[in-house]
Image (cartoon, rainbow, N blue to C red; front, side):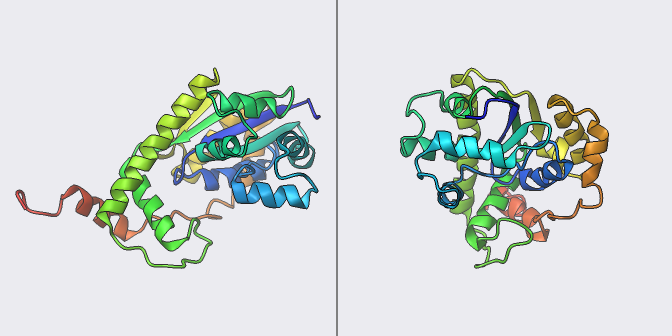
Length: 250
């Protein structure tokens, strides 16, 4: 098993700007290719392509390091809390607490760097999540397979889902005895190209880049590779959900 280098894990939630930031990270050439390698569909498809058993977690992690590691020895992974749950359901991680620690150990003797990505405005985050679920369009480059319509019950469920997911990340980190080395909040660090540049510089410093500003600058000129998906309906749906546009008492 490969045992050198660093493992960067981005502990993400849906609709926090992580996909755009991952593109910036990849273009820096110093944090591997931080994709959702433990998404169930991707995991099984990739394991088959690599000639592995679809339950060979150690083999999969070993191949990830060999195939995706950047020249400075960093392997990047974008992880959702549901990925840990799926791995546990398949028997690849323990069912008890500490699954994140067990996943890190599956990579061998690597130094983990934990990055937490979240968003303050849960309502707008939930609207983005609900739209993606309704349309099947999860990125600005995708094609919608359905129409987004306001649904108060669905939006309420999306808000609750996001609160649960964030709380689950809190528990997973605590149970694994880990704390984030860096924490990025969408509204403060990822909402604009300049903010993302500064966030990337701090991340590259964390992994020991000899020239973090220069490496981060490689993403310049690609800032609109994925566009924000919020549109004029978002604010209207916010007002409709909270009753801002309705007269008092109605």
